Length: 182
Image (cartoon, rainbow, N blue to C red):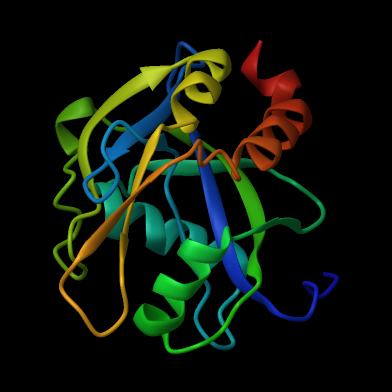
């Protein structure tokens, strides 16, 4: 497997589909009205496919899933400056953005298995979830407000801007996985 570009945090993205070929998306607790597919960091020396299954379980409680496909290359996005600054303090590293390996997984369980408290190994990230079409997800990735924690203070800055830096990656993921989504 090729290496991700320098300066980007290694990450996996999970496109989880149900039997109707709808995609799992969830609303973020920290960014109002922002929806995304599960994703998360790859641990040191961890295989990306293993990381995808681990992240899915940590964030959604789902372990009943099988890997159908993988984007055969790394997809990257850059963080807007406000996000980069916030994450520098949160993650302890100054990353330009994320380099992601994306996996298409088929949900093989029952919906009762989905638990946004996850496996309780991490702080919950999501408030609600839905099965959506690719178009619905792309509509909900763009948001109008983004709260940024100003370093070393407890003030929040409300940035009135569209934060849709993940949208090009999502479009590419849906393009690669199109044969499985029809």
